[in-house]
Length: 198
Image (tube, rainbow, N blue to C red; front, top):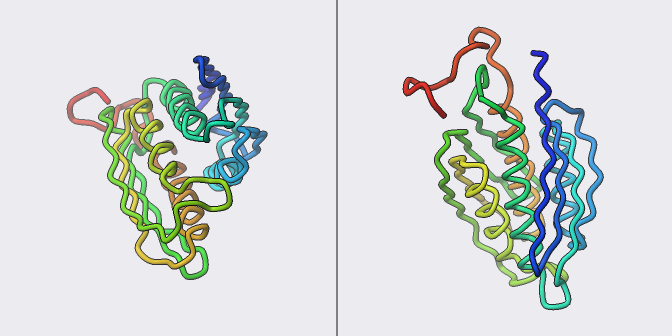
C-alpha cells in the first residue's frame, strides 16, 4: 500500500498542552516526553512493540497531579490514531494478543469498530507506582477509546507486581494494535464490515 498513514494532532486546554505525531507504518521509533516518566516508559513500549512511530510532547498541571496530562494524552493519541487510519479499507480490523512479563500475563482484544467501548479488568495492589497513580491506566485508555472509536477489552489475567501488570497490558495492547491495523492482502479495497462502514 502506498497510503501514508500519518497524522499530527494537538490539544491545548487551560490544564495541558499536548502534541502527537504518529506514523502507523513505522519501525517503532519514539520520541516521548509527557512530563509523566512512567507513562513515557509505557508509550515507548507501545511504539516499539506495535511498530508505530510516535512523537509525543506534553506539559500540564502536574504540580496538582498527573490526571489531566494522562487523560489528555490518551485523547490526543486516540484522535491521531483514528485519523491516521483513514478510510480503514483493507485492514484486518480485529487484533488480539497475550503478553507476559515475568509473573504477569495480560490479554488485549481490539475491534477497530467505530464504536467506543472499554472493558478493563485489572486489580492493583498499590495506589501508586512511585508518583504514578495506578488509576490513571484506566483514564489513559478511556481517553484513547473515546477518541479513536474502538472497542477494547483488556484483562490482566494474573500477576503480583503492579509495574509488571501495567507493562504487560501495554505490550499486549501494542501487539493487538499491530495486528488490527495491518493490511489483509486479499481484501485491500474493501472494508472489513458487512455494513459497509466502520
